[in-house]
Image 1 (cartoon, helix red, strand yellow):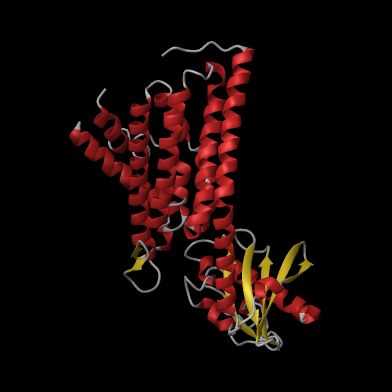
Image 2 (cartoon, helix red, strand yellow; image 1 turned 90 degrees about the vertical axis):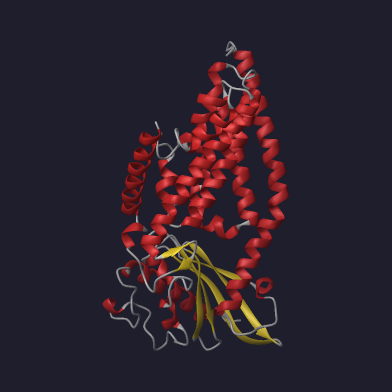
Length: 192
Length: 195
């Protein structure tokens, strides 16, 4: 193998050329995938909205409004059916997850009753905390149709009404924390 | 040089996971299911193949002292391309693998093949080597993922065989070490018999 002698000039030239070609090809691929990535994200959001809200026929994503709370942002998606408000989905979060921040989409009826909850993002332990996701278990069914006014959003161990996931009290607490944060800001004038 | 040898050594005699014990971070981290193992393996195979081809093409042009930074830039570019493409077309897999995709950059298997093979061989041999090594890696991850999914969730490729949970241990990190140790033991036995 013929080793090429390293001089300042040819090292500079080689690295410059390599990085230039790399960045040019990355820019090209980025432009190419920008559309599909945005479409995939939107499809995921719409799917989550449809699963947590009653039937609607407006475009909640276009009517989104947001509010900064506790160092992060809550997003509110009002759902209307023939211009009548049928519910609001709140994209909420909790920093208290076992593996970091968890993000949920919570659908509320106009009176504050929880319609349904979907997990958008979490890093909880597979097989334990990830049971909060409807794809893994039916744990989150217990929130459906409950109004936080008379349903205390805390695990039983902490004196609340939520049956925690076995061996995942921390994940369950974070889930309650996220739902409660959504409920509180929605009731505090989040309503349009 | 015999191209079949270049290809098959990556799968059996020099298998990255079972023999060289390289790339342990993704091997242990993402193999909670057979599907994840397969996805991670194929993503790594693509990066290995492309970076081997490019490194063997530019090997005469890169001065010796800056070869490592140059290889890393090449590898990192292909990893980012894989990441963007995955995010666009298989978002479900991307959500599962997420963090581990950028980590392919520091998978010592990829840099190892660039340095040990592609920088000394021609383009065709390097492509064959990258493909063989990558498929060997994929096979190892798929086997490990299958075992962990079968024992840990009682399922295979998402198809459930039992109701409820399996042995949780195998989904968690210690299970990865235990399953990998048994797999390496079995592979050693097989390789010794063939030798």
